[in-house]
Length: 211
Image 1 (tube, rainbow, N blue to C red):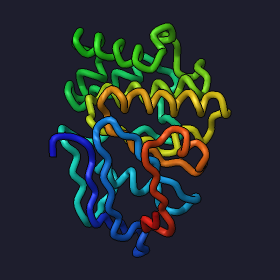
Image 2 (tube, helix red, strand yellow):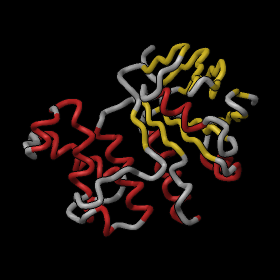
Image 3 (cartoon, helix red, strand yellow):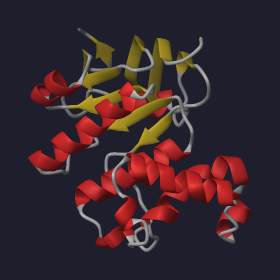
């Protein structure tokens, strides 16, 4: 496939218990797909499996590369600057030891600045993550995902811990990134947010797509 994400017959079992069963879905470049469902429905497992972090049956096809995952609680290194956290997204290209020695190529530094610009955080590039607001931290996490140059962005409950204004801003950002050509899959448990920001919505119940 030339772009986007296609999942067919995905199944995941953890500890001998079926968490996902026969999940099939597709999302195209430029599209935002919302996965809705209650806590425990399997939304996080679905996104982690799509990102290659969980063993699974079935097939996951991502055109143009591997999906990038934005975690619910952003998973930033609190003592690193926003820029340094974003640069971590280039680890797959430059390797661990060069990163550990902070031997970031100039091209990667320039791209990190571009990614911060795309999420509106150029002004806080040199601030430590632990001095940023919750909304800013989630934007840094999105910039780090962009740094991976992935064609598909997976966002796991990215607004669960944010106030309403920041939640709207982060979802609007994901919508804008999709307009720029990314395929975006976002898990949410707030139907009203999904209605406003997603092109399509699917519901997951007890590990199965029901709508």
